[in-house]
Image 1 (cartoon, rainbow, N blue to C red):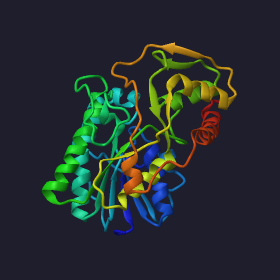
Image 2: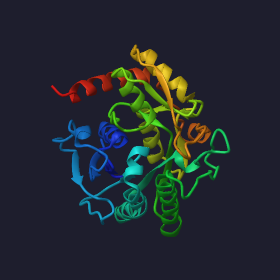
Image 3: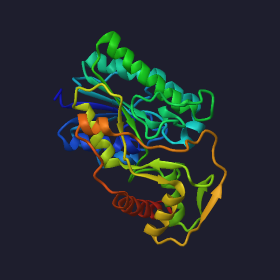
Image 4: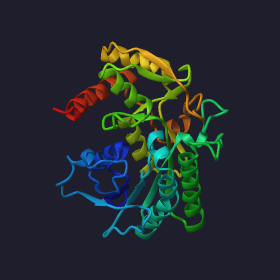
Length: 318
């Protein structure tokens, strides 16, 4: 173990807040950096006041200073849903480029292990299925999704350059379709959209004919994989995701069944460059990290449904 203190950029977001929680549970104090552009202080409200947790509102595209020793820097700062990065295209590119450099230089100055949260989106609309880490991807560099795809691809290249040219201890994790509590109901991704629609009795809007697939992984399993890579000496890239692949039409029906909703499925136009398939080859994570998902889709969705039901009641005007 390195020094038991970590910096988490994007720590007030959906995934970042769960990572902060998991680090604290392992006895690692946390400095959470976030500009709250897509994250929310509500996600970390239960952590504030703890002596081993500190929140700093920072824009990572500016140079970042964190006093004291740091053993790990986890770089999660980025818009992650299509709704967000299409709304914030330049900011998404900036945090993936200059933001990644600032985070890397912070880790370098602290002699900390740097972990980049990359994404399955680097594979684009894949021509190889399932996707191993050796696959270079099929990405449209000028399409509407490119601001996120290319920001993460550049982040991986910059992380690798710091490792090879400067000797920084780095790891790259490619995250596949994580879901769970604290996703925003208006997030725009499939699961929060389907859950909000099912719980409010709206039609579930499935894009295209619904045959496109995703592999969904509960956030607790995702975080466990990120921490496994952080405490290993492997540079990655490392796929962290579930081999359970489901079509969007079947996912929508499953959510209707689990919520007991009377909603129906309605098909709408499919976005440009929306991947047809997505499933990770997780053999590397299984062999090197002894990691594999533990939470079944049904159990994971049930817990997420309970959280969304409470959240929608809280958000409902009196």
